[in-house]
Length: 209
Image 1 (cartoon, one colour):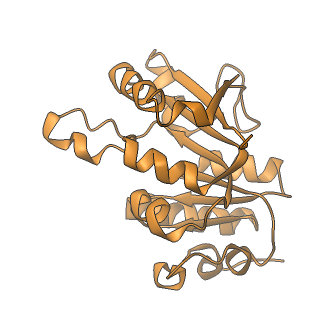
Image 2 (tube, rainbow, N blue to C red):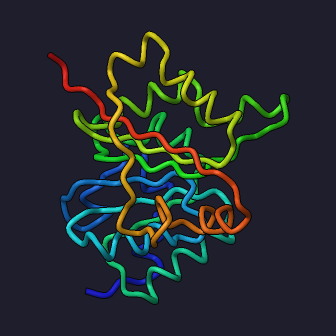
Image 3 (cartoon, rainbow, N blue to C red):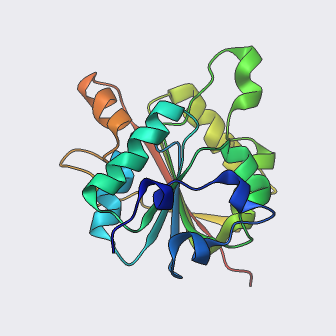
């Protein structure tokens, strides 16, 4: 089966009131979702390694979004879809409950200026939505080169209302990663070349007792 750009690029209007994932992917399968997919390097390589999984990438920057859509078509990748949307809107109201097997959040914008902190993905409200969308035993995987933001992420995830629902697991390198990498994204490769340290965290959602 070959896909067109129109098959790969999801029309946001067709996601209301909730995303119909089986219709979007033309099949049922476990869903891995990357927030901030950039040029799609991680999605491309991970989807090739796991054709039995569905991969959804969220990207706001239009030039990267369009590049990724065309890239998946050129490579003949049939298990990736891309959506240009604010991740907070998608996790907040469009994704069904327990729809996601794994969230991949790699090198999110730290919004370092104080007046922009409200735009950060990791805050208690957004994490609550991530957990709502995540299946029991599903994974939340995070990587960043920004030490202060990593401290904030850890602080949010250790909140007394959130931490009991998560257990820390090993952050193992993914199939998309080359030797010496963790995830194999464009940003990671850029930052490693610059000698930056990468901070990683992997958590699993506990099933209710």
